[in-house]
Image (cartoon, rainbow, N blue to C red):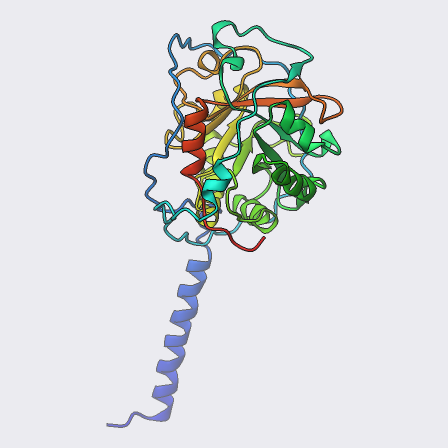
Length: 338
């Protein structure tokens, strides 16, 4: 049966009005700006040194030279895209892995402008020492630094969502040429969306064979233009977004670098399956971060070396030479174009 034209037109008008009304209601629903992925995260291997005699007291640490974040103000928040599951199966080692691991471990020969007596817990008792550098170390003589006892180097790459350390590419190439294991770190900026920061890091740090896991540097920076200090919940959410994206891209679980005050405010009990790199320049990490396992310990910000003018941060791996080789070997990855 055919309906009159006026009736058909009236029904169509009512349907159209109903659809428009529904869209208006949905548009008012504003979801959270950043969401973590539903990734199953099995425990990551962490070098083990006991945390005996741990005392739940946070020591007052020496002031650390801060990097002023150069990122722009945070843009309007938006929804993070859904994350793809992370393939956590270790990739097959490439043929060059044996050559990469064959580099001899150089023994500790650094001096310190402000030496600390750590007693029996001295980092000198650990075998594998290294450094972290940024533009502030200027032109580094990597061969001399290697001869002084630097077996690895973490190199400042990015901070925020638009700043690249001007020395990163040069340091990245030359550290590798001198035989150091190299990794890159990102200084996290609390006034920028986490996914944008992850994309900026990925854009600038190549995924290459033999690189150490990427690092997220989280701390409060009093010198930054960004004065925001998010809630603990927001801090953990933003970190998770950033780390998930890096893990998907590099195939390695990121390392978390932090300092005592930030750890106290945000990270106690958090991220138990992630490796940590801890700053503790006055007392052993077991005293400053009781109960926390760690892979790297930054034990000095006043190191001296023939390869660098001025001072340099000194770090040590939590294990002996064999543990170091096993740890590094477990994170070899198939190379891609640099």
